[in-house]
Amino acid sequence: MGGCPSGAPFLHNQIMNQIDVYYKVKKSDVSFVCAYLEAFEGMAAVRTPDPKFGEDAVLHFMVAPDLNEQFETLIADLGKEVPMERTEP
Image 1 (cartoon, rainbow, N blue to C red):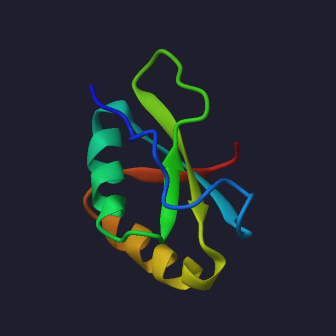
Image 2 (cartoon, helix red, strand yellow):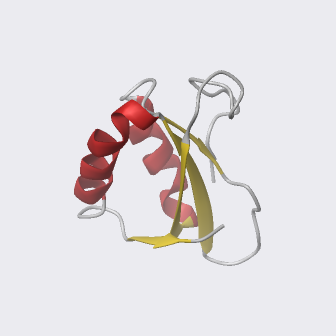
Image 3 (cartoon, one colour):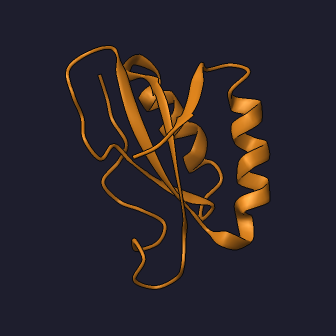
């Protein structure tokens, strides 16, 4: 199983403000979600803050504020292909 790359399009809360969004996904879908988001460079960085045993993982999306509306649209479209549930950290 692959994960999200360690690099991020922008630094966490150091250079710019961000909107923190969390989604629960199946671990088997993590690599696909990360690769999909990478195609939209600079929109959001993705991390898995607390990997645990089990079938699900929580993804932490750090979204550029000026791209939040596009991010929400993108996530809604992605949710048609990959089961995702918005959650808290």
